[in-house]
Length: 431
Image 1 (tube, rainbow, N blue to C red):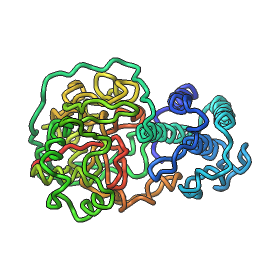
Image 2: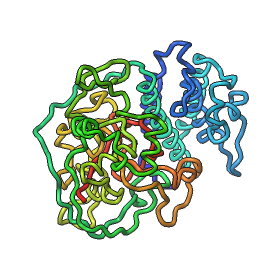
Image 3: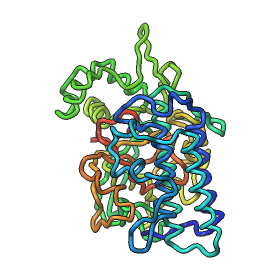
Image 4: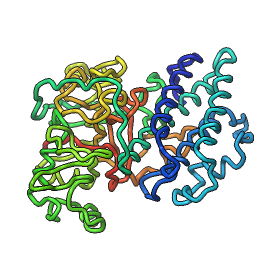
């Protein structure tokens, strides 16, 4: 396990509290008919997902014994209901789940017990680690619940800060020197996940990366040029996906009298031409790149562009702009605008290379399959990374629904290449 930044009860309680406040925002307005919702492969029933958050926190913060076994849960049959490694996805709609009021009482009971444990004097490293793990886990599920609200056409949550104004264009590519680079997290980086461990030397040739992610207008050019009808732009796997799913346009797009509209949560809006392309899967991003004579960056290229400083080998930043925690001026994460911002917004968040919005707004697909770094060792939460190696693609950078406490330059997200519900877009490199 890595070092943990926050070791005081107040800091850990605040982190847990921020995650819980977001959870309650996301599920608080659901009526009884929405607790389960439709059975889809890309969502969990909110009633199950909410209970799973309490189970996870109780399992790691309260029930874990020194010999690796678990004490009993305060909720009968909790393991049979909420253990995601043992409960098949399709079964989660038919389980005898407590209703939402009872589920929220379970979460509250667990949180009270965790708070009591944190208040009992000096916090040992294991307690701090698992409290932080529980908060991070809940924040990730909050983002997934936000995807669910979009998928099912439920109202968007509003941002708590005004949207920052755009600030001039930053078109074109940046020449990046490449060189020897340490990809991944270092042991003194604080809390990181096992798939970020540990920094290892990678040699990169020079490359050219776009200053901004691909916009909706740029992707619309591909659509209007017949991109979804031309197999030459697609990989064999991508074309097979397009045919199987009968996809003829991006997710949530509608053509009306010659103009494109996009559904955002429960509203149809004119396609925002200068916002980043979002809800695009890896196959679609790859096809656009072939059409445009571009390519997706490797994850090493992405991290190099986000974290290094020209002319200063050995320096590696935690965020593109430096070491300061994200703010509404540097990154569009949750609590900022509540939606995507134009691609030229937030110049204060530029990387040292002058590349914009590498953190926040939209996740960015990379070319790479999700694989372990050299010397990979599983963390206690064994199901987090290892089961998904080789079958998922890596995304970097976070979205407007990502918690500020979660994201950093070394963070590796991962999804199967067919997923379009994620708030994902892409940035490109020159061939």
